[in-house]
Image (cartoon, rainbow, N blue to C red; front, side, top):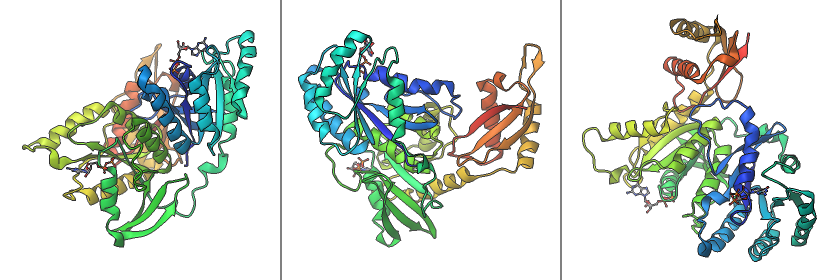
Length: 438
Ligand code: GDP
Ligand code: GDP
């Protein structure tokens, strides 16, 4: 499913993160049912009118020190113009139009993407009048908001979601049966090196296909009679390294790549270990229902002793808990160590993600597990789960039918997930579990 990404740009303190939190808030009503969920500060999924989109708060990526922020903000705006589907430019009515606002507006007017101007802190009628000066910046779409109170945000969401095409989800094209693998990770972990090592074997390449998003290249690849598509989002093969070292750039690229992929290979630098940013991307992938393989790259640089890989894996799993049923492959690109193995593992995960369990088999095993460890008694009534079925969704989802579905809490949900994983191979695949009234 091609995604839609909105980047919020603007000076510090105009209210970007306040709006960001408000846009994501709509989602709280929806039970976050995928494994490994943590809420991120800088990016997330907003939902409105039955549509969802990615939101990225660039404020999370800029140092708040006066002397460097102007330059950083200009860079962010340029990246947002290249990489996002829509740029939300936020200003503050209480300061009026500042020089930096005017500068950013000049950059944004050259964008061929939609730009919405959001004038924030319009908390009352008086400020509404003051806000009209912002029409002078020359944007077609202008919204007056109070992110704090939420006024104006509904209209903004209406206009954003109006730009998202409903049929995008179905438009899968002729390659929809071929696994799509995205290589993601922080700057310098070895993404380009890995991709080049894989596609360097020219004889395996079937063709390059333009991706659904501009600047994305899909390389159709054939290895041991298995076809798959490697998704290279803007940058890796373009060799345009100007933004490469910026965290915001690698994050927006990863968010985009995830939307187009079935499976992601999350590369880590073995010497640096897993970072907070990696964990955020990991949980975003899980929430989007994508298959995941972790590659611990540059393994050649780590001094080995008897249990190195096992110890490393154990520590890594502690960091990514609770979703730990994820394959971990230790790779080295220059030594060509396990790079093809990593592809094989990713293709296994693809198969796991497609796995459909027969209802009779599912009930036979799961009802036995439920009987062995019964759900708790609430307000004097025992919770009874009578039936389970796998839903006909793209990514595995299970519905358990119970007398008191709303009273089943996370620990029991996790027990059921563990039992599913023990009995059926869902390695690398996030599972959704729903409880419904029988
Ligand atoms: P950021 O640096 O652009 O992410 O800005 P923040 O979201 O951190 O907000 C900066 C300050 O503006 C905070 O003190 C917010 O409480 C305040 N703020 C945000 N939105 C509004 C609003 O709609 N009205 C008013 N009066 N204050 C706001
Ligand atoms: P990217 O920013 O994630 O695309 O990273 P690059 O592919 O540009 O790699 C960054 C640096 O790490 C380059 O100097 C690579 O040669 C080096 N590198 C990549 N993979 C490995 C590896 O497995 N082992 C070692 N020792 N170096 C690597």
